[in-house]
Image (cartoon, rainbow, N blue to C red; front, side):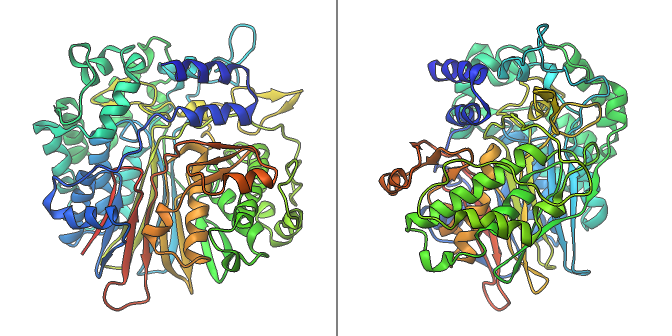
Amino acid sequence: MLKSVIAGLLLLTAGAAVAQEAADSVAPESATRTGATQIGLLRAAQTAKDAGQPVTAENWMVAAAHPLAVAAGARVLSEGGTAADAMVAVQAVLGLVEPQSSGLGGGAFLLWYDAATGLLTTLDGRETAPLAATPRLFLDSDGEPLGFFDAVIGGLSVGVPGTPKLMEEVHRRWGRLSWPDLFDEAIDHAKNGFAVSPRMAASVARDAAQLAQHPATADYFLPDGVPVAEGHILKNPAYADSLTTLATIGAAPFYSGAIANQIVDAVRGANRPGALSAIDLALYSVKERPPVCVAYRGHEVCGMGPPSSGGVAVGQILGLLAPFDMAALGPDDPQSWRLIGDASRLAFADRGRYLADSDFVPVPVKGLLDPDYLTTRSGMLHRDDALPTVAPGAPEFDHALIWADDDAIEYPATSHISIVDSYGNALSMTTTIENGFGSRVMAAGFLLNNELTDFSFRSHRDGVPVANRVEPGKRPRSSMAPTIVLKHGRPVIVAGSPGGSSIIGYVAKTLIAMIDWGLDPQQAVSLPNRINRFGTYSVEDDALVPDLEALGYKVRQVDMNSGLHVIAIGSGGPRKLSGGADPRREGLAFGN
């Protein structure tokens, strides 16, 4: 509790970098190595993960954050379903067994590689701000920003959920199996109960005071006022009803029907009421966006563009590192991490100024990823020690680049799903309700997001507008970075992670580990996380602390709660698929 209070005070007074690091220090989800031994089908996958070995398969593979969700996806794939079918089944279960991370009340970004056409598609299922939202949404009566959790907890932070409509759209485009059959496991677990995992139990216990502020939420997570314990058999009949509606009717009732009404009532009846209305839900649409791709060592690394900053920032980090022989340096050389850390700092400086919803503000994506721009910026890395300071660059653009730096904070929650099916299709989806347990407001058996706090609380800084300010109908900037890496036009890596703004560093680390250092997926995700966004190096091990300090960095050692799920795709032959699941969480990679 004391750590939460201290972090809250820091958020009120700190600048963007210090505030973000304070947020990271109270990550709302527990890292754990326990998981799936109770599921016989997946015991071999758990054993391989515990031994630090990748899981291999010939036909298909799924990697996700909970064994029950992986089992649901595996059933669908084994019955001839596509990666799109399997994602629906996996997400439906995750919303029940990992409700603190994602669900029907949140949103997601998705990449799809279609084997039949060779095309890569990205879909934006990000939440939107209500039409009644204004740039003053998170300011108090004196025009000062609200405390972060004052803004988060309640209806004020809730945006229009995108996940139900995204699930439906992905199945409409690429699914093969019957839509209703994809919800069997999730409905069964919701009706008959599932065992609360160690991570969920720890998350509920840590957040009990916040969860208690809303009656429906408290009744579910704190029965008789006591947090649900590990192993407790938890049932959610309201979620089963919502899933049954989704399975039989589709997503429409979530946007203009009984469930939509429940969402609006919950938001407007919360302790801090929000402005979400029926018309906001009715107007929501999933958007297809152009992929963001960058060349790296003979590969094409593709991700999600605005309103996500993930694809651009990961692409920038790799582009800045391209002139350096990372393979020769290797993962144990402090100079590797100096280069990675300072490349990340440069990318974050650009991210803080330029990245936002491109439907509302012009974003210089092409300029930020231009090889000449990145080569010029990478020239600053030709040194032996840490960059003393970093600043945004000036990429080429046909609009004005007069923007103020953003100070939005992202807490390390969220979930990631990677799937490759027997037809050769690949799917990478990062899915979230933002902060652990989102707004803490529950409707129709699921938690509602707090995605609106991903906007900058300030609309201007020193009279200059912030690109990621709140505006009606706008989608807040995200760091989610679902990634598909192509070689000769075909996918070779499917990757992604939760983790707030650290997602960018987790994904970049993993790609460098696999492409430059030749590590397999399990080795890559298990590699110690070392993240630098704003100058201070956050590390989860002490191996390089003296070396990094000697290079001029301030270093802090913390738990870093990534949740990487990665599949590597070989050129053919037996065991062409190889998967890894982050040992810091309960997920698994499993295939056939």
